[in-house]
Image (cartoon, rainbow, N blue to C red):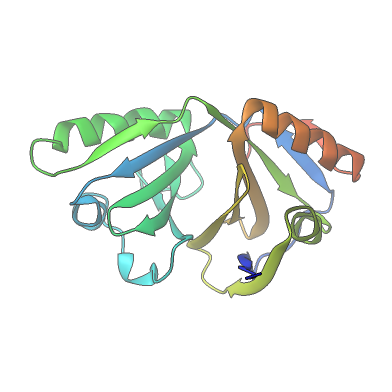
Length: 199
């Protein structure tokens, strides 16, 4: 039997939130982005330095308005040269969709808004270890650049590590029924439920 570890990461310079918290109602949208010219679009139109994305799952934080902490910021994850995933606030998704639609005649690109997926955010001292144990992840990567992020697929859940205002956050993305199961699990592990749009 072959063991294929699911690598996972956290930021080496980010601190943990004081409270172990699970934030719902965060207004995140997931967009899967594909096409033969996705890399060209991301570097030319969005100004992203894709040279840092050397392995599947690595991602970058970006912004549509110059502010990495605004409702127009995003995280984009690399799957292959022709496939990426955006996790971003609703306002940013609308602006990005308009930009992609405007550029589709110029670039071979397409996107799918994953309305079937929902998300919640986990933070706190116990967040990383709880995720590693629950999803059988291998904690092998440390991200020293706050603009880098990382995403891994474990079963039906896409789990990301992101630095938000120098604080470590993890976003879990899945279909609503699956996500509800994990929300209940995390609450049972002591994560306080918070209804917030932060992160």
